[in-house]
Image 1 (tube, rainbow, N blue to C red):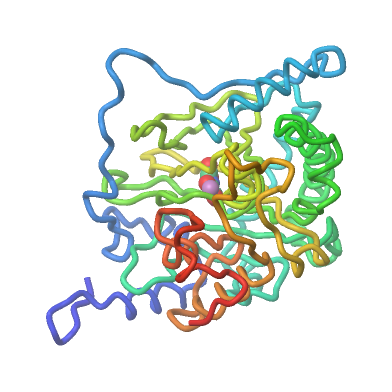
Image 2: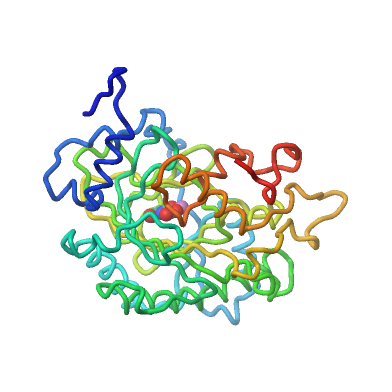
Length: 388
Ligand code: OGA
Ligand code: NI
């Protein structure tokens, strides 16, 4: 452990040294660390798990898309309930070929398991890069790092030039994104209907027309009880669609208890993001989740974060008028998506040049606390006028 002159552990120095290896957490495992370095140690209060509710094995809802044509109203009702009560649900029979999913998991593994020298050219914290490899490092001073590495691939308006992708996973990422976009279209319709709106509503406001694929690699961990794969957060997206391999470790916070989300082969997990919670005026909820570190691994997961089109990102979003009434007034103020990443970038740059750019929740967390920007915080909340 590095200890600075004032006796404290030198977070910035350790972070810098780790970053300069450009080898990520996998690099630590490769050199045979048997202890989790101090940089990655999370405080006990973040690690702990409240015991589960007595005897009731809780699991998130599973929604079956089989025969969607004939069962549409039933499925819409299930989505309305799941998105409103859990913020998370599993989707089965979504039309994604199993081979495409398996091939994507294998490709992500292949990318991360290349020799470090092959990955180094991709290593970057530059927010303008659509494709980059990094390790998910803290953007707030003294925040612990997490036991995972990341390849992120950002599609703006559904577009990403193939040659910008690493060869190790190019074909699979493009194929996976194609299916994600197809499923996004279906989800946009179903979520619109579940809000009681016309089917094309969410599609017409282009709130999910760009996507960032977070191709995550969680190496096995020698002391899983000391760190986390992904710390507690909610996604600052409209919608996230997640695929996890068979390792396990994902947990969601439900009724103040951490609930395991065991892997189900072939299933995808839908996760309502903060911005969907805002525009739905709390009809849907964005729920906190985390990934616990595992003694076995690697664990591979792919999170597809849906965010607005380039055009929609510079226009204001607000709680959907059709959902408001005298009895049901707006809980949130208007915001501009564009300003969220921009200010996050400034903030992240100020604190550290490391940031997980597909995730804006650090900023939200700092800025809005846990209250998710309610209207009564008018004085402190004006997303479009943020200055730091
Ligand atoms: C995320 C996330 C979960 C996972 O990246 O936002 O919640 O299973 N990932 O990797
Ligand atoms: Ni998440």
